[in-house]
Length: 152
Image (cartoon, rainbow, N blue to C red):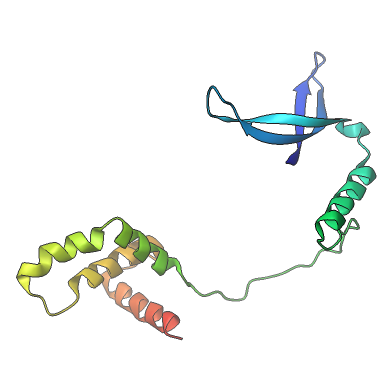
């Protein structure tokens, strides 16, 4: 369930908004989800917002959650100082394996008897292009950084 706002345009060009409590249900004929209105709160400019806040707090108490704070908080400015890439290479590797790309490459390379892990080198180039495009030399540095991140 969710609260939604719908709007309609009046003949004079003005727009009137209404607030509703709705729930999505799947249409049995088309199979597509469609909103079913459970309650009409009325025109948005006439809705008792304090009443909606009390309702939200009541639902939170009923569910055993911490009460909803209805008072606005002072905003806090945050700034990002640094971040580390973590997990994105694992996601690309999972897709690589799920799609069978690594297996297909390894299958083609079996007869050539390479000593180096060629499939992993190709994966590293693809992952680098997908996550942090750089030159071939830059890709080597990227792989080293990724190893350090994953092994720390």
